[in-house]
Amino acid sequence: FREDLDASLKVDYNKNLWIDYGTGDGGTLIDLVMRMENCSNGKAMQLLQQRIAGSASFSFHREKELEKQEPSISIQKISTLANPGLLSYLSERGINTRIARLHCQEVHYSVKGNTYFALGFRNDAGGYELRNKYFKGCTSKDITFVKAGRDTCQLFEGFMDYLSFLTLKNWQYPQTDVIILNSLANLPKVSNRLTNYGNVSTFLDNDAAGKNAVQELRSFCKQV
Image (cartoon, rainbow, N blue to C red; front, side, top):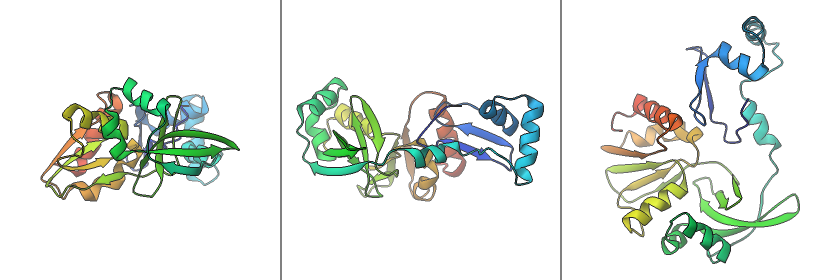
């Protein structure tokens, strides 16, 4: 089964359904067990019965186990964005580096004794989303809320999408409130906040995962 450190798999035991926001795949719990355990329909039903009885040897939340196994990231230094390699990476992505400097920092971090550097985008947990040409990770996972004091909110999946939007508009700062999810797995965290707005615009990927996320948003926020 797909290994996803963002834990984007959602299981609804009441409805006997699951969905993976990372790929857009979904189905019944039996389908999920067959995929995860590479087993037949009959074996999947047996495993489900064992789980209900409390003696299952597998878990629907394998992503959480992977999160615990991920090597810890230790931040060594945070500074103004200036590294030529990072600025070049932004330019290759079509992002205005002047705008990026207003929202990102240069983060030097270590993993297993090795030191690296990346773009750092701060989230509401005080952690950083980290990006460079060869790496995508984070020190802790949470949303990023940018307040402008407006009745409209714009929702982005990742901070690179957010920077691309600001570049397109040639804005240094957004004209509305903005929420960057930093992972579709963070959707439940924004449910209460979004209901306070008169209008919510979404800027998610135009793929199955993005469309499923919009449907989920509309289930608790009619303003989307």
